[in-house]
Image (tube, rainbow, N blue to C red):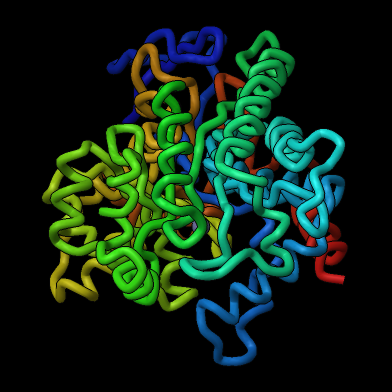
Length: 440
Ligand SMILES: [Zn+2]
């Protein structure tokens, strides 16, 4: 809408005024359609190295996972810092102002801790600061290779000695992040770092171990995320091992509540949906990853009806484009429901923005006084968006792509202008160099 004046102070919007006929002299004019910053609620930064590299042979989720483990085995803190900086810069270029990094690559080869056991987490914090993106670092509990299997090979790098050892390390990371947040805040707010918790999956922790992470997050009032029912096989294995669905297993560990986000939820059952909705939890869909891995289409229509807050993530980064992610949520639902208009354009963009910010513990994620001063402006004069109605949110949800992003502001600081990243000069070059270094 034209004639809206946003005034920022100390990283939040001080006022949002509509019906302003002429901008005040100091104001910066934004091109096109302006939205709240996009939230990338679920990311594993290092998976970016796999993009288009696992498509040659027909494979399964599990063969893709083997390749992902190879990349994980190759990373050290320095390589991870440069790869993540480039990946986070790609995200900001495409309109994401916050990322929830589901971080499980904790330790050195063989599982030996680095001198600072949080060296990999610190590399991610430094990478996000360099790329100008907000980071909610979801430190992930990952102790087992499967329901009846110990950890093996590269998985050893994911594991702490015990759930208690995980909690001690996560507490130390939270303290480090608090110091780093102060250091990067600066006069213009700065992006900041928050530490939350994640349980990798019901495969990776026993109910008792998962309960330790749930309690850790609840005591701190921070977000708790978990991969839930991404594949049918996960439901089958959980049923065989524990006689319940993955979500019910997590509930028995005390994980569910308003700060809980189920990632994927592709194969949630109707009782699961009622349980998650009743607990006030959220679901993070990752449509471009779910289609890349052949996971299936989640029951998002039923989740929406059950009052489950939806969020979106680019997960494996097969695609990094928040507009495509938002559009895919609705388009996939149309294919599975065999009708149009399953979720309204406003609901789709709310999942891409406010829903995700809330899941990441970052407040309301809307353009209103008191909210974080994040925004993204998309051009409405590109070949894709030309002729789109400038007042319809559908112009963003159903026409725009990452390539149409003109301006990105994070905490009042302009990070992208004219489609160019102001902090990382050559994002494509850095991506190419970092991926090559990891793959070779
Ligand atoms: Zn994931």
